[in-house]
Image 1 (cartoon, rainbow, N blue to C red):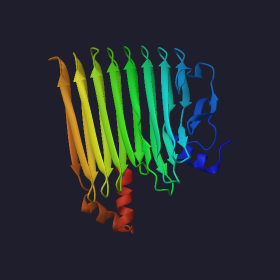
Image 2 (cartoon, one colour):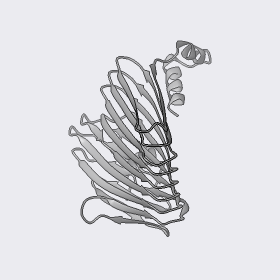
Image 3 (cartoon, rainbow, N blue to C red):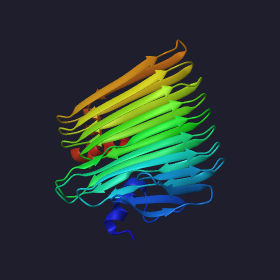
Image 4 (cartoon, rainbow, N blue to C red):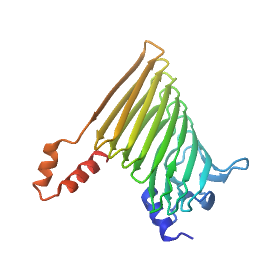
Length: 306
């Protein structure tokens, strides 16, 4: 069912070497390739548009859901709408992401719209990795949209990773938080050559004592362009913090635009941002251990983006 290219892509974006255990849905070139539900987690295709509904029953813990997407045909434009219903008190890992292998001259593109309803006291860890490869001249484009609704006491931890290979990406994330809910976002990004990456995160801290932590680490190389925008909006007693750190190399262009918006005197919102270059003494120190300059830089960047 899976050829070697498919397996390579699934390994890069989801750590899979074959079909996973537990609940999963694998999509390839715009159609469902394989799907499996398990006790407590149901995955069903939508009837009105492309996509799936994932329902996690209340109280389900220790389970995982894999929903990777792969594109291996050139000229494909895949759009999918996925809806997640996470029952009260559940605690699950969701592994998503998209990998594109483009050997042709036409653009291959995936637009994934994911909406989460995380009920009272539930928790998710959501991992989304993007990866591109192939020797063709066609672009590899990924445009994810993530919308989260957190009820009272809910927690969402998002890990969003894109390391090389993606020509163009526009990522939009919108979060609405209820009382005592918690959001953690960790975004890691590396661009090179002429690549373009735009990330726009808006967090509505609507519930009392809700909290949000958003951290972005990025590396821009060659003539690539990065734009990172994040807005925290506090409506009452809440806490939010943004940290944006970037390393710029070559003739890259990096813009960091954090915004804090307090609609209440009880909102506590902070941010820090920095853009700089690799420290020369760190490179020299690694070279004294026998690494070439290129190896030293690669080692430092890998550590920075972990």
